[in-house]
Length: 260
Length: 250
Image (cartoon, rainbow over all chains, first blue to last red; front, side):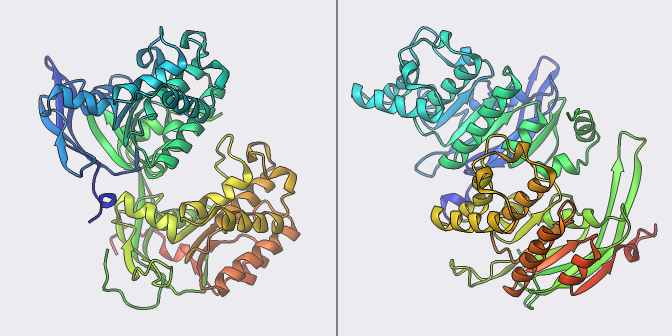
């Protein structure tokens, strides 16, 4: 069996409660290389808790999350050492926050934001780092002339594209995205989505994308899980879940969308 | 995957049943079909017939894996042996396939053309048509050549090729959709009223495309409201009403 036929991320019976309240319970799925999984549900359904558990920012009460590293071994995200996990988050993983201010260093130039992740994994040659940063600014459609500007001078859409450049420069194999188009105008959303779709396809990137926007999920994901009160109530091919939803809550979600 | 089906068919539908349950409308159950069974060989075209609402489109969507198939089997032959990668043909039951298997079928084996183009913002028409070929690993040059040839035949003026079809007319969008759908010689085509918004000249082009695909060995399941088109392309018909839900299990 080649790596292509093996799960990149394996999640089993994942659960987390806050006091007596369920954050997320009994979540089980596999994510394949190059596959984009959308996690949908309304606010408070446990989407973001799940994403943080997968990324290791939160510790689960039960269950486990295993990731296939570059040598082909499955490593338990919650049992590895903190330095090992931090290295993973800087190299093989990307995390795109809804608010770009949470994922960018606002006091560092655009080029610095992109170069920093390269330096964190040992790049030292200034010229090469800058060249790499320029390449990623171009790929995320940011004018090269803005390389020395601070992100605070960028529009929201540009900041979000910069956050994506910063995350993808190390060529991660897995990206976690929390409402990546959430705070953007609709016209800017379309551009970002199209960019993300192209990059995911080009890089063969796998991704878990949390969104409450079903149109975003349809456009960018292969597979979908629907969450309600911390549990996965339905999962399947994205267009299948959207066009032939089986669970009462999925049907409610789909039928509640206003189509322009 | 089941490797025991060895005959020459492309598609074998057996005892398929479908209902929709509307949980938020008092759990109402909408029956669609029951006991649907047919086989299809390469080069054959089957026309689904019946009044609007009888479930013709639902059948196409189930074969494509867009709607779930709660009961019965939809076996699709995947891999022709002669597709260059040397893989032997195997059967995939869409009713039970994993999402990964269905995506693989859609990439290699099943082409689906609906009346409507689901438009992605910002993607140029030419790239939209090339996309299925690039996904199959074809070279950019070959993909472009095929896309240019189809767009030209379907009378999409070349000044539009670099634009996203978002603002195109309904007929233009349908022709872009057809160009994209016919870019690859899928072993199985599912066509849902492919000529609905077209004028006579473009209808003739679509008839030619379907006839060429059949001559090259593709099988077709189609819904054709235009009787002239249906008579020109289909080898046999199937009345969906013969499989209407009778209430009791078959």
